[in-house]
Each structure stands twice: as structure tokens, then as C-alpha cells.
Amino acid sequence: MAAVVVGELPALPLHTAGKYVAGAFVVVFAIVLIYVAIMAIRLVRIERQLGALLEQERASEPEERDAPRAESTLA
Amino acid sequence: MESSSRHPAGSSDTKHRRGGALDSYGKGLPALSIATVVVITIALALVFFYAPLEAEQGFLQKIFYVHVPLAIIALCGFVIGGVFAALHLRTRDSRWDMRSYVAIHMSLIFGVGALITGSIWAKGSWGHWWVWSEPTLVSFLIVFLLYATYQPLRFAIEDPESQARYASVFAITAGAFVPLNFIAVRLSTAYLHPRVLGSTSNLPPRMAFTFLVSLLGMSLLFVTLCKFELTAKHVRAQLRALRRLTDARAGAHSSAGWAGEAPRRRPRSAAPTQLPATRMSAHITGRPGS
Image (cartoon, rainbow over all chains, first blue to last red; front, side, top):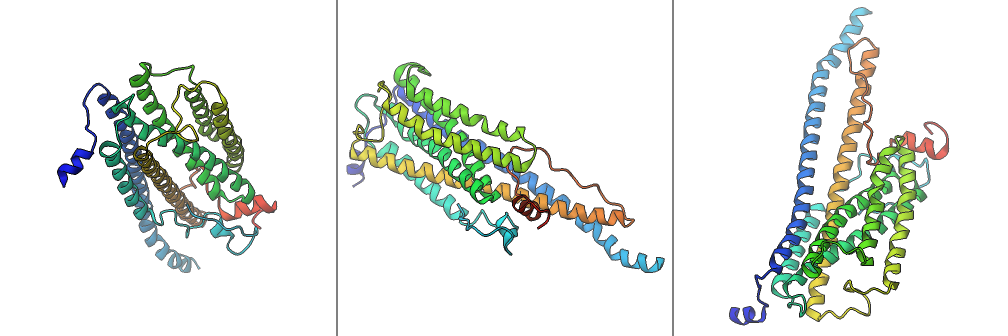
């Protein structure tokens, strides 16, 4: 069965055209890979910004808890 | 991409319509990504193990299965960007501007791929990286260079509303130019460049099937990458909005006697902005905060 299928398939001649075909497919693959890398960098940046925002929120929580007490003391 | 229904300005769900926090661009993205990988893998298998070798060019003709779909999807993406831009001008919904921007941005990337693979094919087939007398190549380059000015145009305009409006006008005009350019090239007399679509196409059934699967794979890749880009931009916009809220609260505390940071200004960018609901509704009705 496999021999029949392989017999039906065209051969892959490795003559001079091979490097051009490989080059074209590698270019497309590289473009997609570069795009994914850029997206990964963006994702890391978003993660960092989100982390910083979370830290900022956590830091401001005690201040907010203290705020009514401070006002009542002044009053 | 997500559909958007038209609502009267100032309705109760205006906030949601203007790019609210409940929007989701990532819906269906995992399934779409898997489908893209599967179809592209099948397409590659068909290209190298199923499609017969072309009589004249032999193995070199395999570039056809990646170059032509890239070029077709890039041109279609430019037209789709124009359609989204028209919808933006019609509805004034900033999400259409975002879609138009992403479609054009992605088409430019696909266009780079089409130009490079085309050059490689030309070198292998004709012995030259570029042939200036070939109208198809030159016309594609003109369209590509035209759209290459899209992002500098956006970046040159600081006001987000003006930026979106001018960019939409540009996208519609340039989008109309793409099919006109295509027709003009078809009507030209030089037929050195191989014809793929139309009555002159004489692809054998196996080649035609492989080409269609490759085209489907590229289309899916385009849609998937567009959705990735839209999701990333939406997440960044949400993060900026969250930071604005935090800064505003910190500013309120500061004015009441507590220390807080000054509100951050949005850096200048070519990317569209999903405007806050109050500002957009003010723009539509002419009344601030209505």
C-alpha cells in the first residue's frame, strides 16, 4: 500500500531549484516567527505593566484604610 | 472578526459599543489557531507530496503555492481594510478603525512576504531578482508602497479622532485603488507573469486543489494573526484605561492631602485608540459628556 502511494507521489529532485524553493518557504516561516517573537515581547511588557499596577494598588490599600481614621481624628 | 450592530448615539449600551471592557477579541482564537496549523500542514504536505511537478519550471514552481496566496491575501486585506474604514466613518465606532488598522498592518506583512518570495521565484525562473518591465510586479510594489505610507500618516496626526478619520479616508481611497490597479494590469498586453485566476488559468486538477488548500491556509493565517493583533491591542487599551483609573484615584487622594503620582499622558502612537465613552459621545452629539 505504502509503495503504491510513494509510487504515485512525485519525486523531490534536489537540483538547483531546491535552494530557491527552500529560501521562499524559509522566508515565510521566518516572517511568522518574527511576528510571534514581537507578540511575545509585547506580552511580557503587558505582564510587567500589569504587575506594576497590581503592586501600586496593593501599596495604596493601607492608605485607603487609614484615610477615614485620619479624617475623624482631624474632626 | 466580531460583528458590530449599530445603536443610536447616547443609548444605554454606548459604553459597550465604544470598546468597553466586556468586549472580547480573543473569542474562538484557540480553535482558529489549531485550524490554521492543521490546514497549513496539510497544504505543505500537498505541495511537496501530492501536486505534480510543472513541466517547464519543475521543482521551482512549488514557490507558486506560497507566493500567489500571500499576494492574493495581502491585496484582499487592503480592500477589507478599506471596507472596515468605511464602516468606521459610517458608524463612528472606533472598533472598526482598529480592525481597519490591523487588516492593513497584517496585509503589509503579507505583502513583504509576497515581494520576497516573488523575487526569489523571479531569480530562479528569469535569472533576475526584479523585472521592472513586468506590470504585475511593479503594480504590486506601487500598492505596497502606497500602503507603506499608512502608518506614518497615522503617526503624523496626534489627535486620536482626527487620526482615525484621516486614516479611514486614506484606507477607503487606497482600497478602491487596489481592484482598479488589478484590472489595469489584466488589461495590459504583457503576459510574461503567469496568470492564476480567470479563463487563462490551466492548472491541472491536482495543482488547483493544492493551490486552493494553500490559499485557505493563508487566509486562516491572516485571520488568526489579525485576531491576535486585535486581542493584544485591546488588552493594552484596557491596561491603559485601568492605569488611568488608578492614576485618577491617586490624583484625588493627592488633592485631598495624600501623595499621588501625576496622571500619565498617552504616548504618541500610530495605533488606533479606543476612546472613552464620554469623549466619543461628545464628538458625535457635539455636547461634552452627553
